Length: 80
Image (cartoon, rainbow, N blue to C red; front, side, top):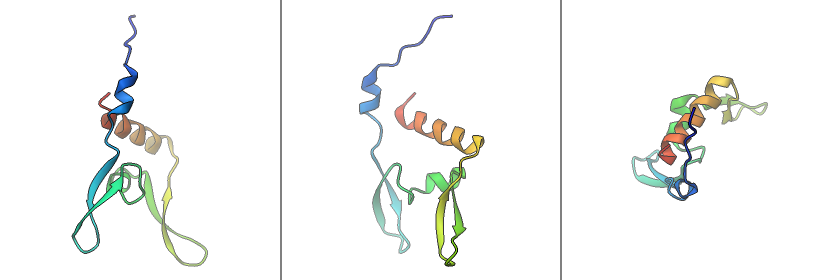
């Protein structure tokens, strides 16, 4: 079975930031991997959880399915 070689130059081309809407509906630029990127909550990688003090914070889920979803999203971002 032949192997496919992906050039390392692909790693130089991912989107490093995305435009999102903030709470007021204005555009805001965030890093692709930022917790505020809605992609991660849409995929279920980040979920809202309440800490001991009652504060709601985004928490990283580490199930197999969410790790696979994040890997697939990153491969799409890299064009692989």
